[in-house]
Image (tube, rainbow over all chains, first blue to last red; front, side, top):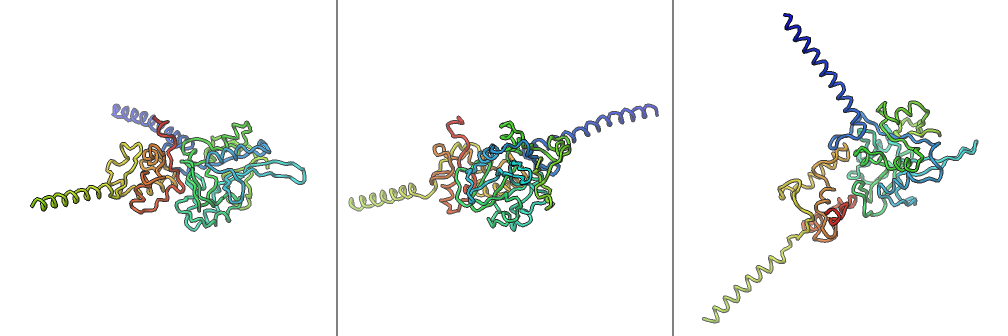
Length: 244
Length: 126
């Protein structure tokens, strides 16, 4: 009887060690998911990618984020109405105080994206990890989403394109917008604009997982006031701004 | 008799010449298969018949779910099969994709959006 009990105790002790190991393992798995998941694994809704843009740190006149976006995604960099612009620098002026500031404006990667609601072919969709994308295989170029987006983030490709980037297919007759550099995120990297901003020494763009309480962006939005543009629409944007 | 033999020989030679000529001018595409080597599916007939289905299935997985680095990738097709000189799967009827699609009279619209050139030149990767 005693021996049996000892065995049982031994078994319980060992199994509790095993359980502790398991408890750590899923935690580590979650951490891995949040910082570049393994190739071949689907995007998970445990992650929500987002950006926090600090208007106070964003330098007026600096367009490094725009240039980096154009280079990364193979955009022409033109600003005509028929040119694709995935990110723009917007200048703000407070008429009362006279303060002039600027901020980058792009797809806000809404939780409830109007562009997805209006798409007749479901080409405009939100990926599990919160990135709003256009599936150009099914896009018919109707441009409803261009109309629906409150941020004017979407562009239509009017002309035949050549020499696209292998990671960023783009073509005539489809709508496109900021992909949050999805091809880089899937490799565990940050966005091109955030990288360029940090390189320029401004560090105005903070990219990360809003769902991970330990991520820099989650800590920051917990600590300081940040704003969603057109928060009244209740879209719960993934891109937030600080200091506007 | 001699004339008849000569005529027969002549006619035979004409027939064979015509047959050989036909073989040379047959419309089978002569493709530059690029680097070539081991394909993702060793069965060439299977690839010829089903590559579009394999690509279409995986494109949805990648686009919608973010599953990358899988076996059937258009970028990998280009990587192996872009012409050694042209570095592209398009451009002439010897190019791997265009050549066969022109032969089969099937519209090829992948490369209206996707890159048709390999990232690094064949020389640079050697």
